[in-house]
Image (cartoon, helix red, strand yellow):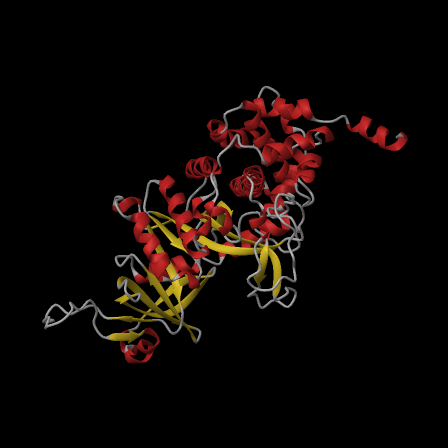
Length: 479
């Protein structure tokens, strides 16, 4: 198992100009994989028994300028391509895209803003202050029960003010929907094949389709990215012009008659087909009908819409690839809910959102400020203050990226852990072991792994920085 972990981590060696930066990166990932609590950098120090004096070194690494998050993301995608059993639909990987809102209590944290919670869960407040994050996942494993392996996770809102700063992310001014499409296309470029991106339903917008066309323009058809998405119930489009249509005087016509998709459940009821499809891990008997129509005012992009009916539930799916069969579109969107389990594991097990970095370079956030009040980022007017803000944002994204890599390695290792070594569970899981089970296994075995492989660079680095627990206990007791 140690050989597999070090082999995956070796892919990131070229992403760092200095050897120590790469070794701190690997150490932090191993600390995330084996930590017992979710207290940020402190948890990683405790899980590997590192000396407390190395806490500052690890914090400085996360906020340093010795790495580029884009190079790390691309290297991680290539590592997944070589190490993980990628699930493919018609020979193409399936990417999942979604956002999550994470509350933050810090008053001096860049990007924190007032957010509305759309969840119907009673335990969540309607309004919070925090970060809006967007993530890309890829499906791995078997089709009945795949896992969503994280590829990327970034802050997608609250940083519009930084888009005008030198050295800042040029995508900061784009909307959350557009940035999800951009991140999905960037990840798809590393898989050297056509990919399907499956986001949530509110991503069916004209800006998202325009961004998709702009990213796919000029590339070979086998390296583009296609959307599979759920449309709203009131979605409408236009029929394509008939071949026998005669253009009269006036402006050239681009569309045919307007069609409300929900009305086709009644008007085309006799054209529906019946089949058995795998939906949400279960085989369901469904009725479906597909048609290609134009969608988007002013865009008029040809999309394939699939009308699905099962258990009295009616849904409308859309796909930008008009050559994809209707059953494959239904099957692809049925896998989308897997990303929810990934977010749950990030919060409860991995501690992906447990970062607490703050800086006085931004003004203090006022929770009771009226609408239209200046953003705290506007107080960072000097070059040195702006540089500090950008480094803190980079530290957030490095913490999340390292957590994504740690979770992905745990998912890859889940098929290699013997069932007899897992902790007791009253209800036995039918799928692969969860990240929590694999983390528990690593906690019991990771301390001895570097000692069994002392010749490796990572093992030497960790062993040389581990503290003498007896001296720490004695110092605490006798002060």
